[in-house]
Image 1 (tube, rainbow, N blue to C red):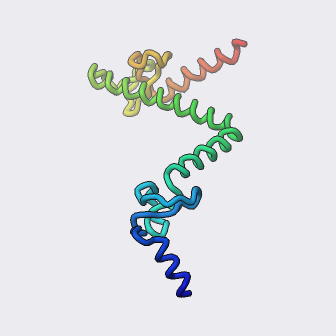
Image 2: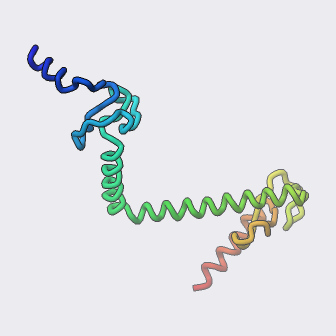
Image 3: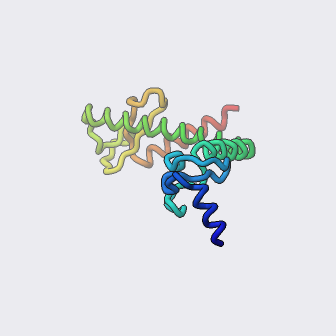
Length: 152
């Protein structure tokens, strides 16, 4: 035991082990700044250096992407559509606030309602919005869906 201990001491002579670490992947001695923070590891830094971790993550992503390509593209498209819709809603809110439309009356049936929904025919014109009650909104969309099903 004594011999091994002295060999370890000679190896690390002149190096502060709290400021240096050996990467688990590339087996190189590197400064502690070249490792990511990880509170689950013993010394608070990852066992793999940032360079090796970047390469590992890229390989892992490419393997996953090649298997699940269709799902990933579908999720990206859904996120794009949701972002587009939320941007439209923000523009509508801004327009309604600045124009100060009477937001209690349905544009179709003229009934007073506390909760009105926004309806528009084109997302490229986000401010062209009609405020309508839920029942009128459902009616309009059911009529639109019936037109779409008949046209083939």
